[in-house]
Length: 357
Image (cartoon, rainbow, N blue to C red; front, side, top):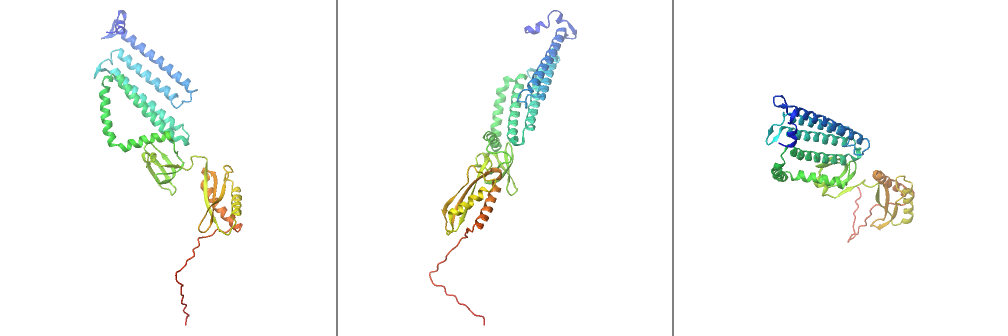
């Protein structure tokens, strides 16, 4: 018997009130309840005050304060009953009070993790939602896992943890072989979170598909193609593919080639095109558009147009440049030739013309 136990059984405290219930046990139970209530109130008040000044309001908030308050009070009640001898009986080498406390710690940790995850997602702006969803899920699984091992320790099963870990390891190996694809997709999803090559709403070209990112999940990413199809791409394939994010940066270059006839003045054509670009509001002045003769083709002198536009307006700007440059060259009388071919025959062709009788 330890020193604390003997103290509660000495003198007046050791007098029996009912059956084996002593005055010391009652006083000890009341002290546990009072101390538990005081600690719970202090913790709740501290967290409430802290929630008004911290930026980590997603975890330090009123719900967290209430959850911890309830946990401390309920645990105090459990150990007060243990002090009275009601929950001091042993099951599987540990007391009922320890088992109940372990269950309570795990349950309240689960509730706290779930509320925190939901709060993070609900308070996130739409543009950061995929990133926050992944972060919230990782936090949730981490808290639940830690709570599980803490609960095992409280329950007194630490001596059996090695056996449990070994069994979990064997089970993990078996499940790993059975679900390699799921695990690799999950890990790839985590890597994608830290790499951040794309987000919801980005126009992309990836894994042979082109379209708008519709959704990003733990195991897969969904893309809405330009022709309205929904494509689900596993995160493992996405992570190992080349990703073209067409709107990652604020400006994107428009590349167009225009051919003019060999008889036309290339310098004059370049001036007409530059003037047309200057009149277009969405063609950026910096970087400055570049217009130059790129090569001499079979049927035309090819003039390259390099103009920058806001990424979200790239397609509209490209179509407008093609349309307006064509109209400007027509107005200036500059010919845009079509392909021509001259056919040579080894022998002279003879054509017979028959007259109608």
